[in-house]
Amino acid sequence: MPRTDLSPGERLYLREAVRGMGVLARHFWKNLFGFRDPAPEVMERKGRGVNLVSTINYPEERKEYPPGYRGMHRLVPRLDGKPRCVACYMCATACPAQCIYIEAGEYEEEAIEKYPVRFEIDELRCIVCGFCVEACPKDAIRMDTGTHAPAVLSRPLAVFDKESLLRGPAVEHSTDVLTYRVPLKTPPR
Ligand code: SF4
Ligand code: SF4
Image 1 (tube, protein in one colour):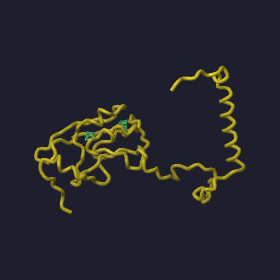
Image 2 (cartoon, rainbow, N blue to C red; image 1 turned 90 degrees about the vertical axis):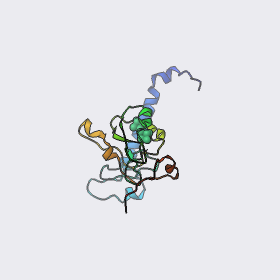
Image 3 (cartoon, protein in one colour; image 1 turned 30 degrees about the vertical axis):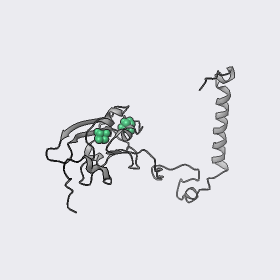
């Protein structure tokens, strides 16, 4: 797009700053004295200290995230409970924050050749871009948990290992069998 030069007035940002203050003041006074959000979930708020201003009293009140929300990662399990991940490093390579750490191992008598011995994600470094999910050729990592990374009291607690990431419903694609060397052994139900 062609760049347009700002006028001297725009360069000062004074007019925009004053307009912004006006918007802020309008919402403040409306919230304080006048308009109340008519949404039922706001009108039904009860209890001490509860008001009808349309904000969420987090963490007591929580809204569900929309379906496309990029939440906490999970390593997707196969039907036999093991990770779908084949330790190809594509996600770690694509990650712009370099917050995925993988150590690959080899199955000896398994249908699938490689697996992650270690798979760690530093959720504090993660910028939630979703590139890892896009890069994965095995649908082995998803951000569909519907939760966000929890607050932690020290950095190491934000590093999630394979055991804590491996969760959620198992996924099997019809094309998976094409990549198995021998049929998968699924556990008896
Ligand atoms: S969401 Fe982005 S920053 Fe976070 S682990 Fe995936 S690729 Fe890295
Ligand atoms: S999660 Fe996917 S992209 Fe990352 S190492 Fe495993 S198979 Fe490869």
